Amino acid sequence: AHMFWWLYRSPYRVQNSTAPWPIVLWLQGGP
Image (cartoon, rainbow, N blue to C red; front, side, top):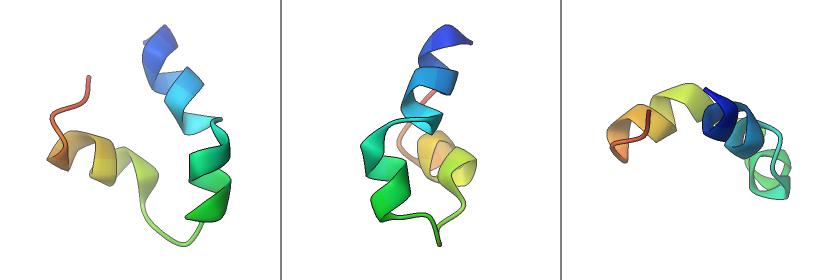
């Protein structure tokens, strides 16, 4: 869960704020 929130608050998310970040993580095989 900690890793999830760390990625969620990462600068990369800010650059792609228009994309459903949690969905992207699931597609990439995230937690």
